[in-house]
Length: 214
Image 1 (cartoon, rainbow, N blue to C red):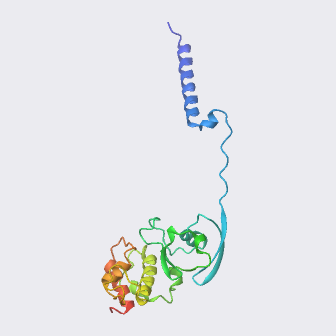
Image 2 (cartoon, helix red, strand yellow):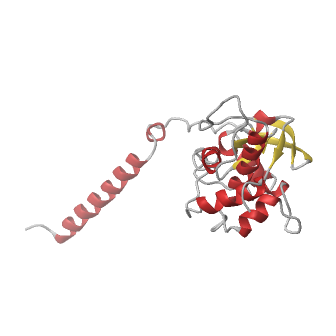
Image 3 (spheres, rainbow, N blue to C red):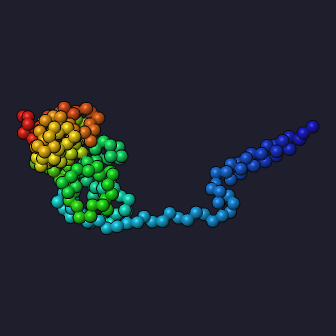
């Protein structure tokens, strides 16, 4: 007959052995074999960046992997520029750099040494709105508002392109002044996604500022 004490002892040994095996399996291979722990992660590489943001000179020491978007939001606290897809597909992070619109989530801050950067905060103030900001309010082009900063920055650049005679894929004559038409504006704004679907309102707002519609 088996002694109950032996049964309990066997069960205890089995549980202890199982726990030790599970612990050993969870440890990194080097630790399980008594090797030295892995070396600590090296500190990030940093660099000084000097540029002008909304008319003000800013100098920062940044991790070289910092995007322009994260520099604006996390270091300069200009949170008007939004982080949407973070893959350059939605346009919520659009800002104007040296007169051209870019997706700031795809561009490293260190690439813009000496650049002139304009964000939505640099276009207007609550007391004195930029004409496009006022038109977006009038035509309800902002709706939920998340994409609006990128939409407005993109629209500012789009109108500047048209005024300078820069053609788009829908321009009928590459040597003629582009028309201020809904088709032309839709093409130029196609990189900015509005999940509320306020596209017709946005076109109305841009057209009014451009002088094509009142």
